[in-house]
Image (cartoon, rainbow over all chains, first blue to last red; front, side):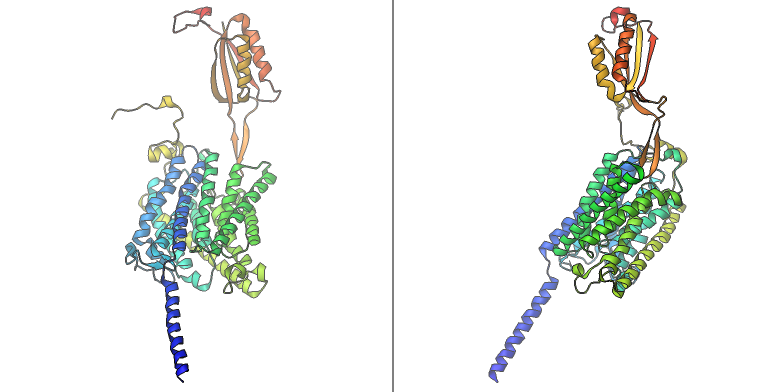
Length: 443
Length: 112
């Protein structure tokens, strides 16, 4: 009897010890994870200047500074908006639709606060960089015709009315997350969201005058921007694992495979279709692949990623070259074609190629992996996810755009567009190649 | 004295420069210019959108020579600049009334 009681006490002590161990596992900061996500946050932040160069190079020579500055402004404005209310509206406890007010001003978050195994501040930083680039992505569509003041007002309004709710739906405990829509790194939140918003905004703004539709001013700058985007995207996708583990490494390889495949595919498409492979096409294809693999990067296998890359290369190429011309909207730098369509391809294909091999036993085998009802159901959820994002983002952006139009006005005058927005909005030109044309004024 | 203005392909500049140097032409003025003749420009395609580039970059070489040297100079430029395709350019020859060398004030043929 005494022996049994010893065993009982020993078991009891072990139980307490193991439960403390388990508790300790949940609530301590993992320095490796924290270090990687802080690094990933910096990588994703660098994507925004990269995007500015990508778009700047594609702009008309008289609108380069304006384009770069609009995208840079997102970094300036959203960083502040995120601290004040953006983070809270996205991630604080709230309703199915929107986060709450509990962390407004990052209230109550201390250096000791945790989010999983990383510091909550690391999570705040990481997610801020996603909000920043999503708004920046939209602005490529409005090249050469949006008042800078309108842009500066649009950025915080759109982030608050569109980005924060959709982010909450998918990642903050909102309804799309609850019904089981898969979006690893932001196919719906970032890419469909920005693509749909771009379509709404160009419909409100109207077309550029054909004389102001110019070829890209600086193709090497586009390549530089695409390189920075590709580099930063490893933070975007591998960082979205929120841990420095094997699945993060997996997402890294998946991301690179899809980007590379789509880059090759786009070049082959235009080589066959137009007769020449272009550097702009290579850069565009890489970005299209990165976009499409974003929602799928933590869910699909390597061969699934390559198939998604092919779909993105072909789909986005024809969306930019054929669909835009057929429908007649003036999406200057193809935000709809690359991000809207690429994001939709990715969100849809996630339901085709997601696999338990990557997701673990709680995951789902997609339609092309398991050939079963489970995959078909997941594909249905994916469709709900992207349709809801397209519809909400489009409608809400129209409202935000109308508010801006009613207050500061959206569009520049025809005269300003002819002279270029660099000079008329900012008073600074991108290039002063003729030195004789500049003389120094005395103060 | 005649002024020879040759509009040539930009990739032919170094050959033309060498040919003129060999002839002993003392100086020249070279300008990057844009224009079109029979060639009417080319088409560039960016993401499926076509842009007509109707003013193409060319090089303009201006030299002033003695009347007796004109034929030699124009022949030399023609010889090195000709590819036989559209877009090889043109040469214009015109009279020059006077030349003044700024440094010395010399005028006329002495100043060439």
